[in-house]
Length: 313
Image (cartoon, rainbow, N blue to C red; front, side):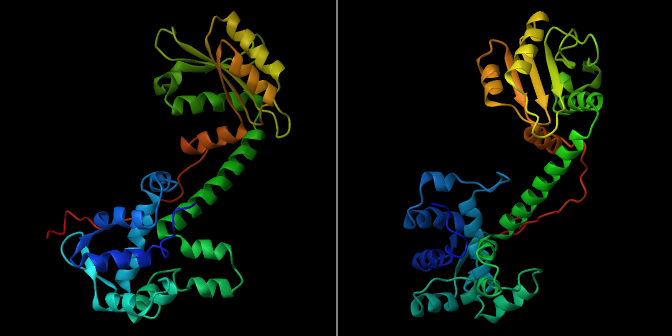
């Protein structure tokens, strides 16, 4: 069962605030509402994709925000709020769910929404346009969730494009790319001189090496197979790499491909006494985006919030 969306949380929140009778903080009523809805520990532990905030807390915050804009809540002292006469009246006269359609009855909410770009349509209007069920999910999402959903979609598209570009690289450029990525990730103490490509004839079955210490006592050897999509890496290639590592008396190896590994290849790497890590194309693209290899930051969006410390009681 998923964490209820922010509109579903509106009525339980109003009920608890009215029942309190005095100004409350969101953290005071949060555990009570969680109990009212019988939310599990797993649900309460769920976090937004960014990992920076709990999903339940985020949605409860936005339920409060929207209802405040409709005039159902009012702020009192720092971080505290209470139900207004309108909020209490709504709870008394209407037992139905409270959602954005209900809030649209309040001029203050309509005026606020009209000033918020992209927020003029209610869930019902979206559905009437024939955009359900996706529109329902969008309408039920908090602003942070919509931003993160868009970010995830953009990043997925970027990873796919990155992988397409990588598959068009020459073998030599691909090997250099892997070396650069490892350095950006902090291997070799993050210093380019601690890593080098070894590809070419006489490479001894490895394409690169990263020295983890200045004397080269701890080394990670690399095998880089660019390969196009559909041309999978099988167990023979893994066994060959493990053999090369044994010859070099190495106990760490990294096998990277722009394609994928067969199940047998992954099993051979798993049972090997030599520690071999496999990175396929999808994982490679993810790491490149995360560590800004082959990509640049096009824009930065600032999301600001109230500084409670600024506003004294």
